[in-house]
Length: 75
Image 1: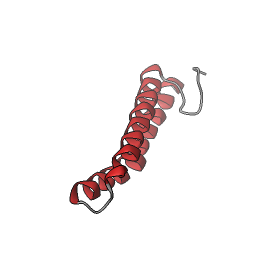
Image 2: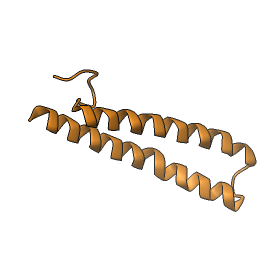
Image 3: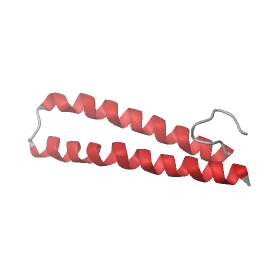
Image 4: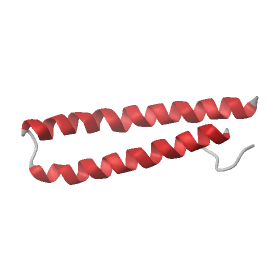
């Protein structure tokens, strides 16, 4: 039962990471497309996207294994 709860918490962290990094990233993307930001803004946006994808996949992996978001191994 504890693994199910830990997996659920890891899934919530993946969703929270998506919201925290995805929404500002989407706003920056729209601003870059509209010409409101300089062209060099694509590099930080790509880095933010890379970090977001890595973190989300790490939390989803923990979800699948039933690991608490703040731990590396199962309890």
